[in-house]
Image 1: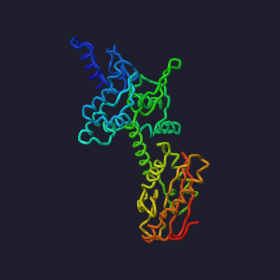
Image 2: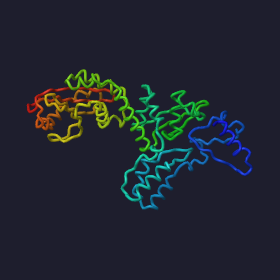
Image 3: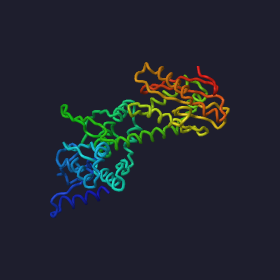
Image 4: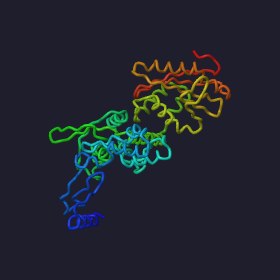
Length: 370
C-alpha cells in the first residue's frame, strides 16, 4: 500500500503538468520518508498556522446568517455553547458538520435539543485510550479539563500516527490536533512552543463525560465488589467508607464534584447487585431519597443512601449528619413499611473531592430515630 500511494502521489502531484496545486487533508502529518519519497516540496498547514485559518470551519457571521435564513435566530446561544470554540491560527470557528446537523434538526422543530453529532463520526477510541492509560497526574489533568480548567503542553507538530503512544505528551498533542482540545494561548520558551489547552465546547465535553462513564462501568463489571456490597448491606459503616473511598480515588470526577456526579458514581457501583432492586430519586414520605437498595426478601433490611457534598474537608461529618437528618424528617422509610419490611439501614454519606465519610443508623421501621 505504501508503494502504491507513493507512486500515486508522485504521478498526480509532482509530474502532472495540468495540476496547479492540490490539497491533502488529514489530522496529522503523513510520514514523508515512507510515502512522500521523491515528493518533498510540501507546505504543511496545521491548526497553528494563520494561513486559511477561517476556512477550516464556519465563522460566527456565517452561523448567524444560516440561522437567520431558516428563522432560527433564537438558537444562536445554544449553537455557540455546543459547537463554537475551535481555534485555527487566529480565527475562532464552529464545527461545520455539527452546525449543519443541528440546523437540520431545527427545521422541523425550532426547539430541538442539540446533540453530539461529531462524536458519531468516529469511535472516539483515542479519548478512551487516554483515560485507560491515565496515571494519577493525567487523571488530575483530565478532571481539570472536565471542570472547565486548562492544562499546558509542549507542541509536537511533527508527530505521526505511529508516534501517538510513544509518550503521554504525544497523546495530548493528538487530542489537540484532532479537535478534542482547543488552544487558549501559546507561548515560546527557548526553541519550544507551549500551548494552553481546554475542552472546546459542550459537544466535546459530552464525549469526554460519556467515555469516562463507559470506562468506569466497564471497570466495575470486572471488579470483585463483594467486600463493598457486603459492608454496605450489613451496615458496617467504617468498612463501607473505606471501600467507597478506594473506589472514588480510582475514578475521574467531573462537574466540579457536584452531587450529581457522586450520585451517578454510586449508581454505577451498584450495577452488579443483580439480586437487589436499586432505585434512585423516587418519591418517598415527604420527598425523594437519593438511592434505595432492597431485596425481594423482606427479612433483609433495605438500605437508604442520602448524599451530601461538603465545601471543605472538615465539614464532612456535618454533611453526614445533615443527610441522616433528612432521611428522618422526610420519612423516606415509610413506603418500605407498607411493603412488609421491618428494619432499615440508613446511610448519610458526605463527599469532599476524592474523600468520603459515612455514618450509619439501623432502626426498626415505624420507630423514632435517635
